[in-house]
Length: 262
Ligand code: DGL
Image (cartoon, rainbow, N blue to C red; front, side):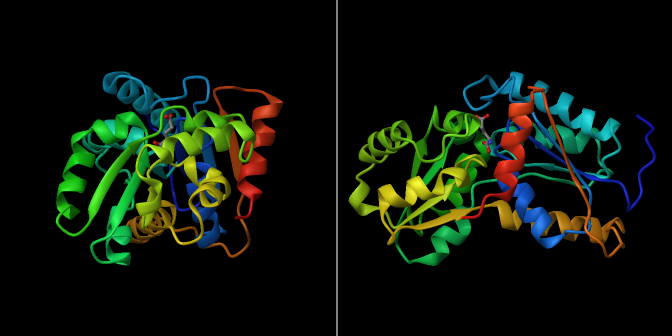
């Protein structure tokens, strides 16, 4: 791989589908002058119910695609792909500024003493060592309740952010964790912030919701700065969406999600 990169090259952002756009929008917010290449692997989504070796292989292949297209840095904007592949990617490409995402447990635990924190994520993220270690680190300070959400990312992939079936799904889901005793919820999958209105409506305004998008974007900016790779131009950059499901409908969904306010 010998594509020349410099500070004007784009930042590559990868997710199993459209979920990583919740991280992309945080990146654009704090670094509007950068160009972005977003790759979503919607044809192979969901990743979160697959074997770890399969997720690792798909993630490496897709991140390499972004590198071949000239990305100067990579954001793995997917909790599932991060836990399956980021360590390997760092070993393979030690010089590439590479940032992953993990469930934002720390701010949730710090928000309120001795609270009950529900962590929503894919079955795969919650099963991994990386998450188990993260949970152990904080489980003396709060009651941490992992909540696997198979099937939830598919609503977002379909662009269904507030339909009846989504409400039905969420009511059953939170019914399984004693809904009345939740202090905060961590959105540990990058698709879930797009369902935040429905989640809020089901849980009520007293439940505080956290996600890792903003922290991940700040970490990318720090890494680019350290590497001398921040773009110096002052005008706004561009966002280019690429998806393994190469349809007009998919592109429209990506544009819609990037502009969505919540
Ligand atoms: N967006 C991904 C995450 O953050 C997962 C969705 C999937 O199952 O592919 O975990």
